[in-house]
Length: 126
Image (cartoon, helix red, strand yellow):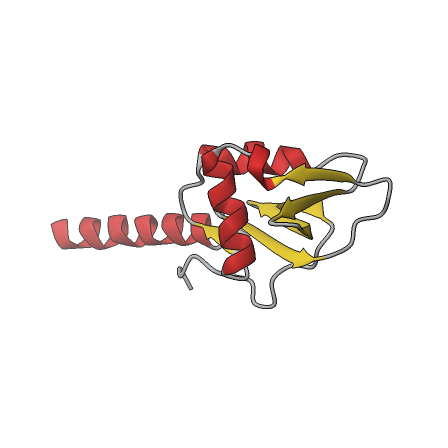
């Protein structure tokens, strides 16, 4: 009888975990950057003016093709995204070159002046 209760509990826990992971609500963030010439009306964010944690995000997105945080999201990702979202297009100026930014946090795209990365990184759950 105890074995049956244990198997039932394991089954419920497995379904609950799978539901969280497979529910279409990713717990990650992706930042992609692509060299772009901003229009005259665009906001340009200077890499040098960013706090160090946000500079790390930008540097990784540019030098490694994308930045990916999973499953814990650093606090700096939200403040970084806020710099690029809004009614005006925003670009990043990094070492004399302008970059369009694509930023997704969880299931919401926050900025889209660049295309998403070629391969959507995963957290490795499935």
